[in-house]
Image (tube, rainbow, N blue to C red; front, side):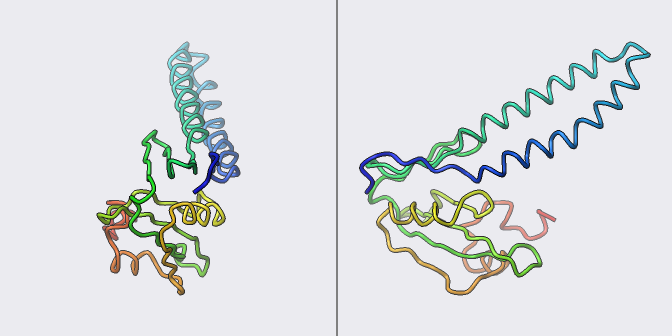
Length: 178
C-alpha cells in the first residue's frame, strides 16, 4: 500500500482534442447563425444558445479535470467524469482483470482493467482510451490482489460472451451502440 496519496489523471491530450472538436463544431455554426440573425434582430436568441453551449463546455472541462484515481493508504478512490466516487478499500477487491480489446475492425488493441469486488460487481473500470497502461498497473499493484492477464487479445464480442457482467449495460447488447 502507498503511504502517500498518488493522483492519476486521464490522458491530457483528450482535453485538447475535446476543446478543438467543440470549437470546430460550434464556431462555423454560430458564425452562420449570427450572420443570419443580426439583420433581423433575432441574434439575442442565438447569443443565449451560444452562452448555454459555452456553459455546458465549461462544465465538461471541469468534469474532465476532476476525474481522478487516487492511490493511498486507505485504498483506491476513483472520482468519475460524472462525479461518482468509488472507494476500494484494502481487502474489498475480489479480482483484477487486465485484457487487451481490439478496437473496432482493426488490429490495434487497447488495454482495459476491471476491478471487481468480492461479490463480482465491477468497482473500477479503466479503459486504455483514457488511462495509461502504467496507471492501470499501479492500480492493480495497489490493490494487492492477484492480477489475471489475458494472454491473447480479444474482441468486445468475445468479452461480452465470456464476462458480460464486466461491461456497461449498453455494451451488453451488440446492436444498441451501432
